Image (cartoon, rainbow, N blue to C red; front, side, top):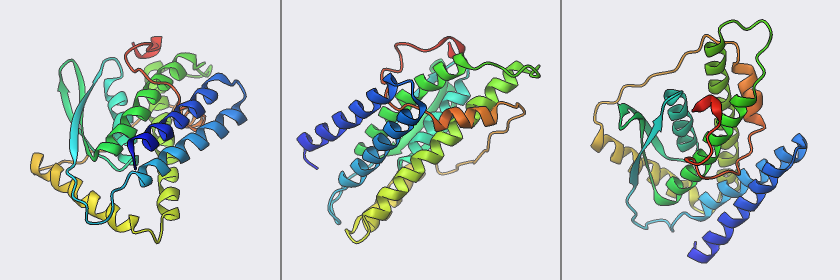
Length: 233
């Protein structure tokens, strides 16, 4: 994909997401979000090089500050994973929870764009949450809301990516994707030969509400450091 085509595609994505941001109509918001995520997924397929082209995966470390640092790190990790990157939670450092993300340049760029947007949306969504009257464990509710939001966003992004991959059948993309996944895994293994898997748990009752908020997520904002809402600061 040429640089000019790439920039035009990303600009179309940003415009769709901006429309989703501005509307108060939930149906319109969902429509714009679906169109933007589908276009972003197609961009990921169109960015693939021809079979046999040699590229080297890159990596970056993202640091998520407190509060809710682990929950933010989980969102960044799952967004990266949905977009064919390989994230690893590597613990505290540099003032927050760190995520080491491996992937090819186009996928790292897509993951960065969406994760930055979704961190802000998660913050503003949590700030707007009205707790049910029977909730007494407020922090547990909010944490489970964050987990629900993240899981639903991951599901929606994976659906878009899977559809784009299916539509590319017959173009050789499947073989290229398989080769790239293997390359990324080799890069991870070179850095971290012993990897321990962990699964987060939740005791709060806000998970279902977080899922509903994730389903309505607007993927349009960028600029993670500029306007974090009160509940995540």
